[in-house]
Amino acid sequence: MRLIVAISGSSGVIYGIRLLEMLKEIESVETHLVMSSYARLNISIETDYSPQYVEELADVVHSNKDQSANISSGSFKADGMIVAPCSMKTLSAIVNSYADSLIVRAADVTLKERRTLVLMPREVPLHTGHCKLLYEASQLGAIIAPPMPAFYNQPQTIDDIINHNVSRVLDLFDIDTGITKRWAGKKPL
Image 1 (cartoon, rainbow, N blue to C red):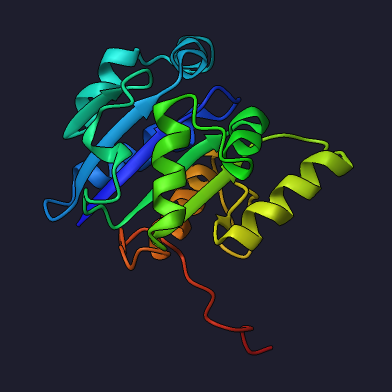
Image 2 (image 1 turned 180 degrees about the vertical axis):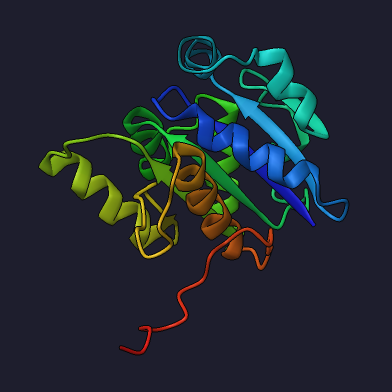
């Protein structure tokens, strides 16, 4: 399986990093990473990681400026793409097919080839324009998966919340990390 992981310039870069960390442990998945310049900046602001560490988690790293990369073509057989986090700027560009970066071009290709595109928008609160873009992305075929915490799994740490969100996104590709606490129904009284 081949997955494209894009990290855009929104708060929440840890979601993209954790995706790559989880996928690194699964030998059958080849990852292709693209990061925006603001993603690189946010990695140093929001985490103790470096962009170099994040790049080392991927099998292949592409420059966001390289429109000639293999992932910019529909003939490149990827199983899907995850944008984690997805900034509103990136969302807008995807919805409007404004492929001025490799992230957006790869997302555009993913949509046109009818492959799975998962967007993890990270913005709050949302105004009507954001909601309209999310709706339009969904109409184009994208899966909208905002990183919203679940509490049925009784998270104890921020990592628990991050891991649950990321593993639920990987479920969309039938990748079971083994760490998802699944809903088993209401406990008997």
